[in-house]
Image 1 (tube, rainbow, N blue to C red):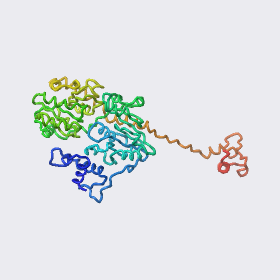
Image 2: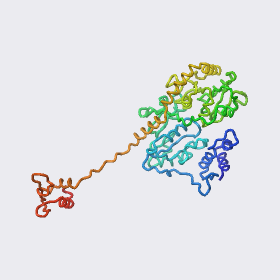
Image 3: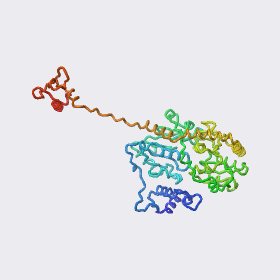
Image 4: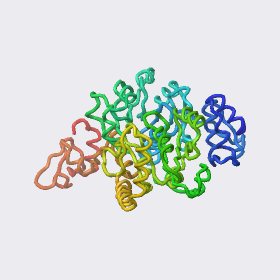
Length: 480
């Protein structure tokens, strides 16, 4: 099949027509890797290999299946996630893929357990080279080839592992605070979990009491390669339909109720010209947002699709707004801090754990309150500059990939200690002779030829050599 056939499969199986836009070089949203991502997704959805113009059909390899990846004695690790969209859990997985010690871990595959959940093919790029599956049966099959499963919000682990002769250990990553009713519901009822890893101290709030003592906190890392700027501020403004001279208050992240993305709509209605509001992300609130803006058009409010070029997005913002009701960490906030963008946020996630990093706003902030905070932060040039510099230095020191990798590697080594090889003692011939019970020693070294005699009669003329003793030991091995 060619690319168009792959796109047909995606539209039929995943119910999404947007991927043709991503593969059209003439469209503003075109992404260079979209074609290969779409083909990869089509292979997963259809179960067949798809040929591309870059790979002749005769040399197109079959899709990888679980068990294909050679471990060579390393810990065999698989990934389970409910969906593959564009959120913190997916970025967390990709950080693990790129930072864990390759001499310690062998990645066996990824399974999107959510069955009919829509998959964003752009998120599949980091998983190339490993098998990818879909649904509970695939999760069970992956488990058969793993020593460890890293799981994100997967319920009924015992049900998935039913029938697996040697079940792997299961580590669940907790990324929801106590305020999350969804998180409490998922994690408190979790069964079949061996260990919880929390992305912050706040995320321990959802860990069951039975596992709280063994839960470990490993905070997220900021991958600075995601923050590289490849498009200018002017290019991004042009893409969004924002005037070149405009100021931009931006939102970046999942479009969901707990993120209170509607605060950006309220701010857009209260901010004066030349301020514009740009919302970049995907999520369940998108249809409602699109409908609202269609009925209430605002030329200074721009709802954009998700963009994985985080550096380009943040580089075109004058401030990043995080109006969430709750967060356990908030990777978008951390990325904004590392990028040197002023962050205005509610007291959630790292803004709650490490006060002073952001300008705080109240929960359920009104449009006028948020607009006032944005304007005050912009006008307080010296105060904002000082805060941004201090916060950036802290973020770049605190949330490094090296620290993240070291803590995860240490955890896995503690869960799978490698047995130390015991060196077999090498016994020399002289030591064997000394151990022979048939030698009768007189004064001096018992191995001396002239002073040791064998009770069994070995040795010519009563002189016993080392070779004689070895012959004796060979015949009377059980006596030694």
